[in-house]
Amino acid sequence: MHQLRVFTKVYEHKSITKAAEELFLTQPAVSIQLKRLQEQFEIPMTEIIGRQLHITEFGERIAQTCYKVLEEAEAINQPV
Image (cartoon, rainbow, N blue to C red; front, side, top):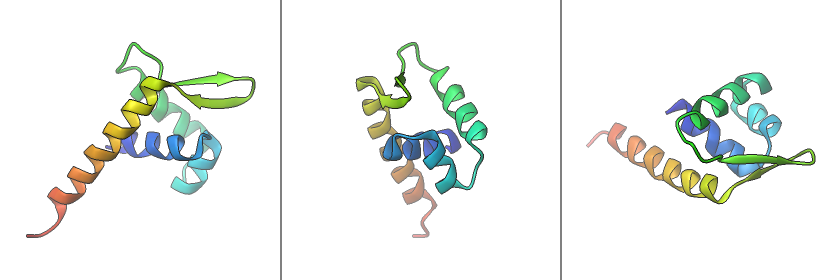
């Protein structure tokens, strides 16, 4: 779940540094979590063009799935 949260922040900010700031993590910690999530897939979720981080089409799909999973997890944790 942590990796999904990290990826959604990277997706929102299009920046590892800004995601790290919002999550109160170091930039290397965010990079490691992003790498570990990426290792689960053969298709890249992000790419670096110049010095800018870009989310690939596959990454866009993964981000939408992350939001759904996180939303469902939050709903499960809500008292009935």
